[in-house]
Length: 58
Image (cartoon, rainbow, N blue to C red; front, top):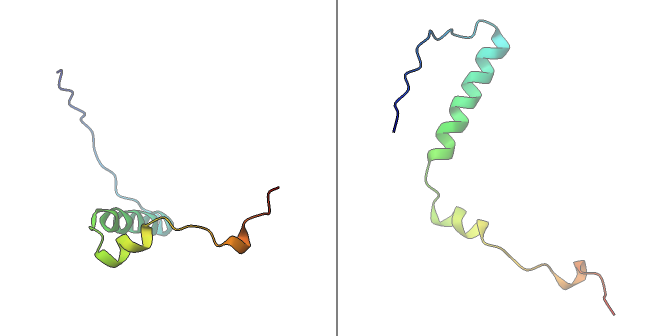
């Protein structure tokens, strides 16, 4: 496998809006890496739809 090196400089965001966007993206990335607890896993399970929400099919 060929290894590629990308070189360059990182420029920090200068605008207030850009800074808040970068902070929000960083917090979101950290949040995505946190493992789920048992309560969150149970919420993600699929559930059947109540009969009242299904259309009547003949």
